[in-house]
Length: 217
Image (cartoon, rainbow, N blue to C red; front, side, top):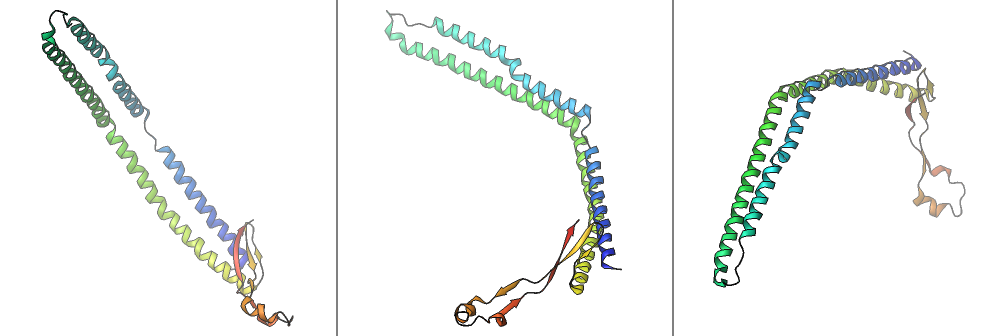
């Protein structure tokens, strides 16, 4: 097979690789969450957000009740000795408030947990199935891509070897192998001392090995 034919075959392999990737992405895009599942999740989130607002009136009622109780607990000017008792009563009311608020908070958390558990119970299998399908697609196309990648790698090495042997660039329909001459370098440690009185320094010139790069046209 001529080198330019190999370059054309390389373009075909790369096209196959691109097609595999496009097909894989198309299949992955098809694996979507069903609308009914999204509705379940959306409704569950809505319910969870409404939990606190549902208990808001109860909290407000509790606050009003506590404030009303505190309002009637005043310190009579003539009974200063009752201060400690009043403080005790106030403390009891505040303790009652904290206990009730803690109870309400626990009820809110429990309700939210129940809603979340219900949503997960309805959607868990579907999410697992979607994840499993995506994993299967990745595995399926991984094998296809690896085969094409191996062909691309092998043919690329063959083309580079051909171009280096020919010593010239070769052009295909879609790719070209560019012949790149070896980079010229100078031994500067020797040049610094020698070039002062000797312009004929070319014998110390070093030329690297030639190389080839593959470029898309």
